[in-house]
Amino acid sequence: MTDRFDSIVIGTGQAGPALAVRLAKSGRRTAIVERGLFGGTCVNVGCTPTKTLVASARVAHMARRAADFGILVKGGVAVDMARVKARKDAVVRESSEGVERWLRATRGLDVVQGHARFESPHAIRVGDRVMEADRFFVDVGARAHIPALEGVNGVPYLTSSTILDLDRVPAHLIVVGGSYIGLEFAQMYRRFGAEVTVVEMGSRLISREDGDVSDAIREILEGEGIQVRVNAECVALSRSGDGVRVRLHCEEEPRAVTGSHVLLAVGRRPNTDDLGLDKAGVKTDERGRIPVDETLRTNVPHVFALGDVNGRGGFTHTAWNDYEVVAANLLDGESRRVTDRIPAYALYIDPPLGRAGMGEREARASGRRVLAASMPMSHVSRARERGEVEGLMKVLVDADSRKLLGAAILGIGGDEVIHAVIDTMHAGATADVLQRAMHIHPTVAEYLPTLMGALRPLA
Image (cartoon, rainbow, N blue to C red; front, side):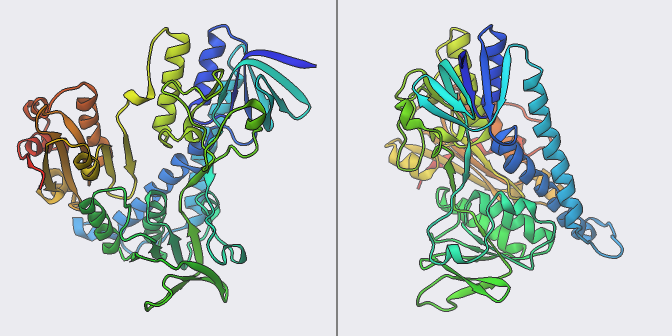
């Protein structure tokens, strides 16, 4: 027997549950299918657990710095990793169970547990159950990418998911990958007490960022005792006693580093391999992503792709915006597009990096006349008062229209302060509007007007 629905949502990541609830409340017969844990990547193996661990790591770091603030901590600082993990697990469990309760409590929404696979453009199978629908919404998230490194199948390795199961601090964690995921774990475990080495194949950390931002991030990490090895063009893995040896260079000395654990943090891959998309006629690219148009439709018009699978952002906030775009267009009579949003994201080392819009490379390539301004965080009163002066603030502006092109705020509160820039850009306002705004003292954001007043032609 075949069940018939108006809409079926596959996956319960950031976009799926909210969309399923909206569809069900609009009177459409709706089903949502989940094969694993409710809440998807963010709740279970992404933002929620990692930022909970980052918070614990920050407490340990600040406790060690207590004397800098005139506070004495007797007996030293010890990290009980089992209790750190238990706290993380509790936060994750509460979030995941909350998503499941919300879905099951929604009238008109059929919650189905199992693995969904397309059997035709209008039907999926979940176990023995065949389900047909007029529209499908794919929100199945992504998983850690395992690179084809020499020796990778012969050693035990961690991914950004499995490292969350550790209840002991590694003696020496080697992180292969010098980008967002890798650097967050690197700093986190260094603060928990591990020796940490970051191995990056490129010439610098986070190569998509401007050089000065990349250099400042490296300075922050090395200042905490993290070893950084770049230009590792000959990476290979092998066993070394109870640990892992990572070859970095084929010729240059030292050629290798040996640690107790290795984390592979070199990107993520969409979970699209086993959905039977070919039977629905839905195309994927060479990386497994599902190409979509500005309204998130695939090449099959009644199939939509949201979140990590569509290559339109790969963040929790972009997935949520995917939901908003689809819901507005289908249910609210609006005309919204994902291309209307301003690219924005954060790197959650401590202090964090908040980024919006273009970097220098993109701004130069755009052909515009560009103005730029930069300021070290050591000039910011709030940063000095808090004893956290690492990082910098910088902004790029179109010299002719005076509109903001992009900004990077690496420093205390950078992930929050960047929203003043995002909102100004979204409103289509100019740098002059932001410069003339009166901000509250003492804050980090109060220096944005000062930054706007320091604009000069980009060298």
